[in-house]
Image (cartoon, rainbow, N blue to C red; front, side, top):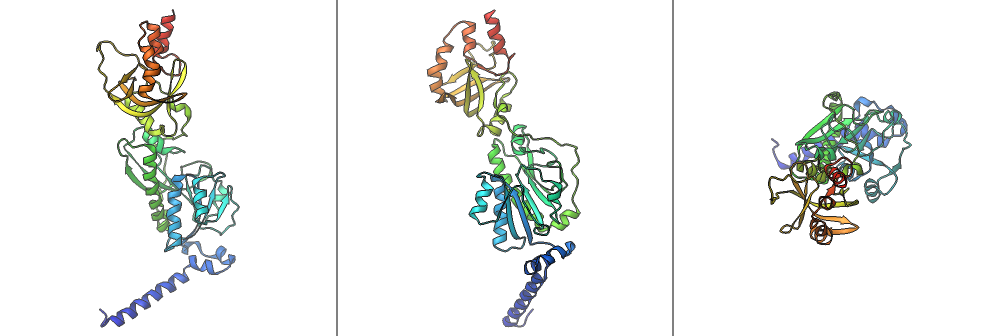
Length: 381
């Protein structure tokens, strides 16, 4: 214990000065004060944070990591010395953020000089980085991926997590390797429990924040992470392809209530679920979940695609493989509430008595050979 407060203050000042001297002598700081020749000659084994980073990204998921890196660079700078950005053409969120925060921007593919950056960071970029580019980074290129790799390699891991009903997901930091996406060694990984009934957008936002913090933790301890990295292997690997419009077509005969629910939460905000009605495409909006329908004849099994209107909840209930699901609105030329669609269109068809006319009132799966198609065929015969 120091004898008086003055001596304690002097000791603290001396210790602070020592830390400052150590930091000034750190190769990562010296490189700022020397010429390019020193940058190329500094010993890699002694280089640690703060890092000179080149960031590759495009969408809002990537912005969360870029935001945290930029904040560190402009404040304490204990992890990030400088950061520059590579993004794709167009008005993508990463480009907007970089411009707003005056970060140096590079077009894809970038023309960078050896020794200009220490580490690369790729988050939701979508382009394969070639080996020559990867080799320009002394400490490699890191990738933030929103799944527990090797599960859900590919461009749409969050959507497939919801679509397949996974209970556990997470974020993984890997080291980029050339030629293939998402196969590099794992440096860091953290699990996350998937909340019930969450959408892909909600889960993606949570994983973006979690991934940004895991990235900072990895950069802080990068040398140790590199020495303890582990290869993925192909055991348990699954692929998460891009979401396509064709996925939005419902097949009432084959899909269960839970499958339709997961499909809606996975893609419904981007691509409306679709079916056909009397030969026309109809978009189904505002999913209402599973419906409990009381039939007048409980012994008569309804045909998948059968539609009924629930006046109390203003819901269109549609029969699928194992029950009924509800929608609050549709688009047929224009957006219509369930009540408007029933009163203006559906009510006229359900009043008909013949089998053929009854089939006309069904929501029909687009592919052929369904029960409703067969019913129409039999009616014509």
